[in-house]
Image (tube, rainbow, N blue to C red; front, top):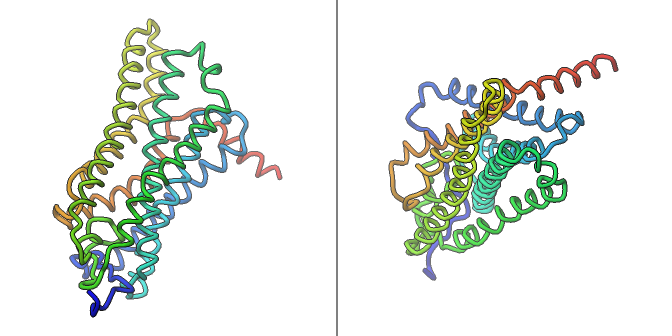
Length: 309
């Protein structure tokens, strides 16, 4: 190790399988990223502008959209810059920072989805106590807890990955600095680190998913017991969009990370990861708003105000 040449930058292999349709593929990704950025930014802007949306659910949704923007922006622009410029390199420091931001924001998203599930539980199962339980102070505390917890969960693992020696190959078989492909390049035994990461991931994902499933079990039972068909329909559509996002998020991330990170088909992981960081963030704003009468009314109100001005 004393005579080894340590890596100062990595090569992101990306998608070498699609060389013939490179530009078309990355142009589509650029459009998807811009749609995602526009959709989430619109959610944040409309919620802040319209007082009718100043409720716990939309407060959590703003935080979720913020984390989505940070997560996708940490991955997609670098990939697109490399693709359109013909470069494939990323510095060691930027690589480690990219991985840290992506996984921290992912953790914040999971915790926020759990908080949104709890909010829906209180709103539907305990409607008379909703304003008493979901106070502004509690919502602010839970949101700060989500962001701090995301940092605390990921930082120690990222610090260990950062301190591993990288002195051999520097080609990462991925389009961003995912932890598995990076650990494959370490000149050290990463077995313990992978085991700890697997345990962390299992406890965190299954724990947060468990809370969401418990919340929705109570919600479904409450909806079934409602005597009014209109009430059942309204309650169902209130929760359907959020439940859809929960299922998609957990399915994709559990498939990728609830196993030793250096194992598995890299090509499949790249496709699933791309769906998770490009397609799903683009669809989420539509999932949350397309059937939401309150948000559409607030959006129309904001547009009318802008037109008057």
